[in-house]
Length: 530
Ligand code: ADA
Image 1 (cartoon, rainbow, N blue to C red):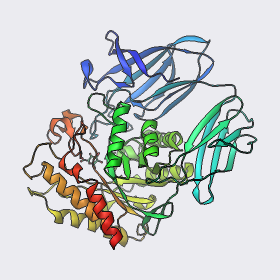
Image 2 (cartoon, rainbow, N blue to C red; image 1 turned 45 degrees about the vertical axis):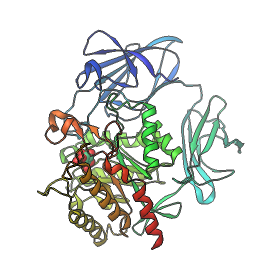
Image 3 (cartoon, rainbow, N blue to C red; image 1 turned 90 degrees about the vertical axis):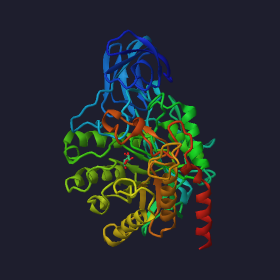
């Protein structure tokens, strides 16, 4: 039962007004940019054992069934799943309380200094499911494209036999929960060029479920990335899941347009910066053939947070829940965590090591990475599979006015050479996970902040990264302009936006956007000629 629709809403105890769900109460209208407690309320039919799931809300959320607390979520954007006893069959009240005040304690996962706005509300789809006497708990699929088969991790509430079916072909009955190897009748590879999806149906007699999957393999070897055995160079954008009037509750039509634009421009990857992506986004990426880096919430978290037991507990829990919720999407190739944290400090190694170990334990089929801003001073890069550098040469710092290619070249070549020279890192693929420059639409002065400057920066970085033998890819910061908390950043974030989008907040292209797909076509032609 999808519960999206018009709910009753009350902010800080004021009289109720109608509000759309999914929706952010502080994105537009009466409560724009206000902080406090928003209560969403609706009436639903239900009873017996039920499961409430929400694909993401914020900043901290509590769920009440007939006034009784059934669960609390402290991590914004994290997928929520609550199993509870719903009482007698009939009408019940569901209340979702979203607190968007900023918790400044060091275990908090959303702090005021973050370079993106922390909205309040139910960001994504919310579902209610009646649980049958026997129901599925887990159906995770590990693809094995070399053998044309899958490994299924199956978990049920009680052990009963299950009938699997792949793309309409009924397979041998499975006796109970467990790990099974299933042949795919007509196996087709999934790739960005040919995103073929298969469907697994499972029937336990009490419930039938369907899971889509793709057959693909991602590997890192000899400092390179390989997809289905072929060398892979990533070229993509960082993307915040946001729209000016609706905040983090981006309308589906807009989400779809974003991904179609990105695909059409020739990019093959999106980094879901800086929180787990919605199921709708991942479904579109699967279908369109866009690779995804999915990561848990975090932004420049200091050592005090990284060593705080509660922060650590929250991050590990968020990582585990993100991986379980999005396991079957072939588009995801990297699990990531903690963007630009204090990984230049030795004490960061403990939480980074634990997060990497957990991701690998839960999912041996994907690679693990995090984006560092510490370049050669980073102390945790040996813990992950892919070395990902965020760097802003020629943007932050310096007194130059016009674009200087030498700054970008020196920085990128220095980073690649560093990785090759450090024995623990030299075998790992390296990517530039963020690089860019801000541009104000209509500024054609050619100076910093102009469209021309941004275009020169992006073109230079993409050319350097994609032609360098030691580089496995580049992700531009960022797809579109994104809102920030302007109380804090008003002097560096004009109009309350991080303006480094290749398109503006309404997706109006800047000059840099128009480099694509031409630049990528030219580069792959010249690579093929070599
Ligand atoms: C960092 C960070 C981004 C954004 C960017 C910028 O690299 O990861 O979220 O803040 O800098 O625009 O400065």
